[in-house]
Length: 85
Image 1 (cartoon, helix red, strand yellow):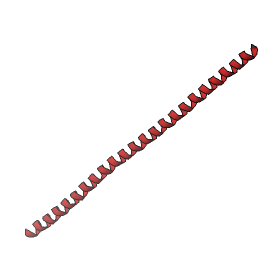
Image 2 (tube, rainbow, N blue to C red):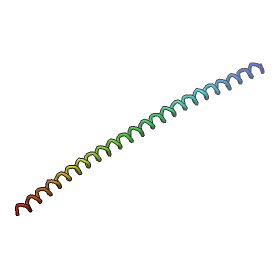
Image 3 (cartoon, rainbow, N blue to C red):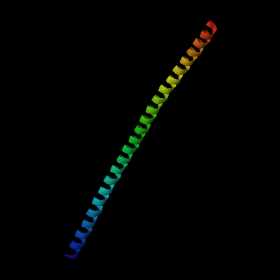
Image 4 (cartoon, one colour):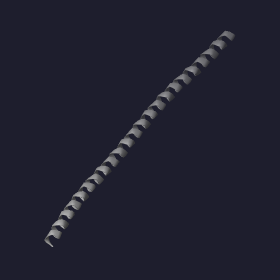
């Protein structure tokens, strides 16, 4: 009877250890997945922000080129106006 009790106790301990190990493996897999998802989200956010600011920079550069062209036209107009006077 004692032998059966010891075997049952060992079996119960092994089952608990096996269940704990399975739970640990699931926990590690979920944690790894969440980390990958978070990394992907951060990379996407960085790319989105970079794209936004790149677009804004290009827009401002185009505006600066246009302002420069308008200024050059104004200077030419002023010069021709002064020559006519």
